[in-house]
Image (cartoon, rainbow, N blue to C red; front, side):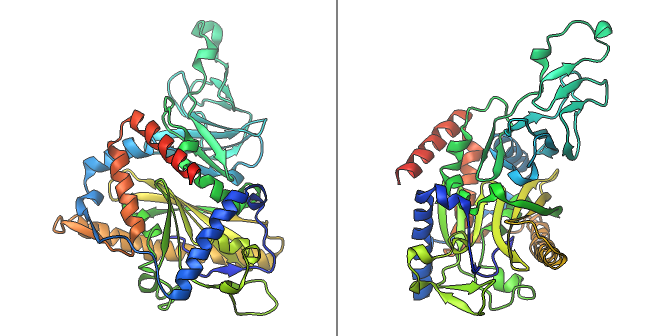
Length: 433
C-alpha cells in the first residue's frame, strides 16, 4: 500500500481549518462519505464497466519514457513542496525534476517564487540543497541574485562589460500555492492555468488544513518505473496480499474512486470508524451520526492522488494526527524512479514519547513502501522487460488505474493549446457540478 490508510480513525476532537472557510467542500466530502457508508453497510463497492488491458510496453519502452518526461513532467503543473517545507521568508530548496534544475524560494511578502536554477551568465546552478537566504551567489564567477530572481551583482563589472541586469534575472516558472501545497510548471512559457489544472480538487484538499501543519521528517526512496510505482497508490486490491505481514491478511481490499480531472481520491467503503484518543476503545457506527457529527478526519480518510505523481494519506503517530505526502518523480532510466516522503503533522510533537511514536509510524511506512511496494515493483519491471507479456490487466475493481492510464495517454498526445482548452473545460465542469 503506497501510503494507504490503516484504519478510518477518529480523535476525540477534530479540527480542520479549511472546513470553516469552505462549506461547499464540506458538502462534497459529506456526500462522498455518505456514499462510502452506504456501500459499506451494504457490503458493496463501485465498479468500472469492464476489465481493461494496457500494453506491457507502457512500462518498459525507453522512447515512451523520454516522451513522458518531456510531455508530462516538463509541461504539467507538479506539486513541488508542501508549504510547511518553506514556512519562513528566505527559506529555499533546490531540486532536479526530469532534467530541469528548480529553485523554490519563500519571499519577503510570503509568496513563493519558482525559478530555473541556472545562472544567466553560464548556466551554473546558483543554489543547492535547502536553507534560508536572501540572495544566491553563483559559485563559478560570483554573479549574485536576490531570492526573487533579480540579478543584483556582476563580478568585476568594469572588466566584464555593460549588461542589462533586468534582462538577466533568473528565469521564472509559473507557480501556485493552495491548500498548503506548492505547484510549479517547468515551462516558463506555459499558458496552462494551474488552478484550472487542479479542477477544484485543491478546494477539497484545503480540508486537511495543511497550511498550518508542521514538517516532522522527510526522506527519499528509490523505486521502479514511475507508472509502476504510481499504480500502487491507486490500488487497494493488493493490500491484504502484499502487506499481509505488515497490515494483516484481513485488511480491506476495496475502494471507491472520485475523479477531479486526472486527480483521484480513493477510499474504502465502510460504515465504521476506529476511535483514537478516546476514553473508550472500539469503533463508531457512522450510520448513526448526523452530517454535523461526522468527524473531519473521517471526511478526508483514504488516499488522495494528484496527477501525475502525488499521494496523500492520513496517519496517527502516537495519537497525533499526521499525513504522509509521497512525491514521485521518474529517474534517469525507464525502470527507475525516486519518491520523497514528507511526514507532516497537524501539531509539532511536544515530548519525547510523542516524537518517538511519530518516528516509529514514519519508519513503519518506509518498510511498507520500500520493502514491499517498491521491491515488488522492481521485480515486476524486470519481468516485464522480457517482452513476453503483451498486456497487463486492470479489473473492474481497479478503476483508479484505468483512469490514470487513460489520462496519461491522453495528455502525452495533447498539444500545449489542447491542454489549456482541456483543463479550462474540466474546471468549468467541476465548478458547475
